[in-house]
Each structure stands twice: as structure tokens, then as C-alpha cells.
Amino acid sequence: MIIAIKPGTGGEELGDFIALLEKKGLRINLSEGITQTVLGLVGDTTGIDAEALMAHRLVEKVLRVQEPYKRANRMFHPEDTLIEIRGPDGGKRRIGGGCLTVMAGPCSVETPEQITAVARSVKQAGAAFLRGGAFKPRTSPYSFQGLGCRGLDLLVRAKRETGLPIVTELMDIHHLELFEDVDIIQVGARNMQNFTLLRELSRCRKPVLLKRGHACTITELLMAAEYILAGGNDRLILCERGIRSFDPYTRNILDLSAVPALKRQSHLPVIVDPSHATGLAWMVPAMAKAAIAAGADGLIIEVHNQPEAALCDGEQSVTPEVFASLMDSLRRYADIEGKKL
Image 1 (cartoon, rainbow, N blue to C red):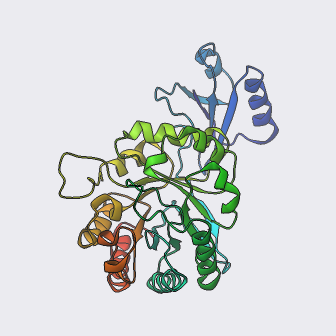
Image 2 (image 1 turned 30 degrees about the vertical axis):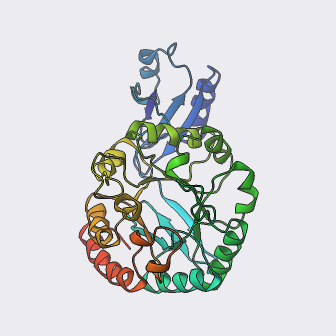
């Protein structure tokens, strides 16, 4: 249930009203926007009399939420969520709220020289975050599984050297304490419905990048997001990275229609991963531009200084030169869409 509060209401009067609702056994999600204050009632609202609420002097409107996701719902939080992260260089990075944020780096961390070289090149081109895999979930047990803890150490070293905050995937809740210096924890497509992992991440304050599963619907993605939000972690970013299809030409099918759909249904930032979606480096620039046109708040792009020698997903990784050229183009696209890159 949603309660829209009359403009100008606040302070002790609003606090008393919230306390009254909490006595009914409900949890209250308070969203204070520039022009509207909204209370989201979480819990069993079947016994709540909407007409009686409408009669209260503070209440402007009462609505019942039909969707199963509550905290992720835009009705609960009408204004876009803006996530701010301060890098080791002291600069603020913003995700959402009219900004276009680019995360870039190799699929997996391989050597100190590789990750540092890529980090320097993507920063020079304008990327706001360094992405890289330390723990790699692979379909085959014989494929390169990442460097693990050593890979995390190399990412942190590159972070300190370049000033770029880092994004990397967490696969096991027992590794969470190792991610102290990680700025954004990524939940990969294979773990989107690992509810034990999601509950654990809901209790931390570190930002989470939640990727859509290979065969998951938009509603299922938002329900997975609800697990994280329900536990108190509201620093959440959604990622469209392609879904399975019958056509094997590309690795996946990039569902760009999911971007405006998610933006309509939810207040959370939405970024797009054109690298995993297509699996083809030459497609990445076109799909990146299309994602911005579709309304994405950012991109996560794989960049490798020697894609032909990459230990993981080299065929979908662009070179630093291609990435720099793409960033020049993206600035123009961002201007058209009224976003700041």
C-alpha cells in the first residue's frame, strides 16, 4: 500500500503518523522527494481501511500496490535512486539520477601488468569504474576459473594506482569479508536467484550490481532485487546482460526493451552489458549506443589489451583503442539524451 502525503507535511506531525502505522505491525518505507513525500507500507495490509486513511488530515492519496515487489517499485519511491561512490582519488562517482556511468575492464584479472595497463587505459578514456573478475563462474570445470584472492589483490592494487573504484563478482558468501576494498559487489547472472547470497548482501551497506539471469523475466529480476532491498541495502543497481534465445548467432539476445520497462516499474538505476549480451566485440559499440538511446543509466564493457590472448571471453572484449573511440561517441549520445558522462 502507498500513502501520498500532502505537500508541506513533515517533522513531528509526520513522525507521529508513521508511529501510528507502525503500531499496526507494518514497516514503513519513507521516500521524501522534492515535491512529494510517499510512505510505503510493507507487511499485511489486508486489514487496513483505505477509506479511513484517506480521511486523515495528512493524507493526499492511498493506493494499493498490485505487483509482488514493493521496495523496488517506483510507486514506493517515485524519484530515481542516485548512488554515490567516492573513489580512492577522492572524486565522487554517480550512478543514476541523470548520469551516464561507464564501467570497463577485462573479463578476468590475469597478471599485474595486464590489469594495471587496462585500468590506466580505460581511466584515460573516461571510464568511472574498473571492472574485472577475480572469481570466475565458468560453464566448463576445465576453463580458467580466475585467480581468486590473488586476483582481488591485483584489482585493489590497480585501484590504488589509478584512483578507479572497482567492480567485481562475489560467488560465495564465505568470501564476503575478502571484499572489504571492493566498491561494488557484482551478483552474476548465474547467482541472480541465489537467495542465500542475496539475503547476506541485503545486510551490508556496500553497493550491489545485480545481473539479470539467462532465462529470467523482468519481474523475477525485480523480485531478486527485493531480497536485497528488504534487508535494508538500498544501494542497488540492475543490469541487463542478455537472455537465452533459440538463435545461436550471438551469445545471448540483448533485451533492450527491458531498460524502459525497468525504468518504468522501478526507481533503481539500470545499466547494460553489451559484451556478455552479444559475445562479439564488433557488436559492442552499436549495442552500447542503442542502450543509451533506450534510457540506460550506464554500461559495463569488457576491455582487454590483448583480446586474442585473453584467458576468458577474449572474443567479446574490445581493445583500449576501440574503447577510447567508443567513449568519444558515447559523449555525443549522452548529450542527446540529456545525461552527463
